[in-house]
Image (tube, rainbow, N blue to C red; front, side, top):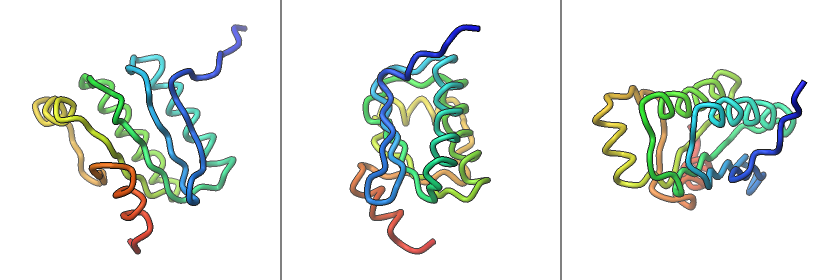
Length: 123
């Protein structure tokens, strides 16, 4: 059995009581699946109830990758975690809209500070 290497270009840290996932690399199919698994495991280990997914370094999302990353937020919310995406670049936002990806229930913010403010406010 092949041993999985640590995720490079992905940082997961607890900051101000939130799990902050920073994606600092371009996404591809296998990586998104690993990120989903790692996020769900980190939520379980840390007993996190709030999460920020920082996509400010991501320059391109195709329909599969966008749907997969947003599904990660939906999976997390099913286990009680409130999720905010931040840092979406204009070209990523345009492709999400052009691809007609369902964003129902997805919270976003312009930057990480705004994401912390949203998560600090009552639901």
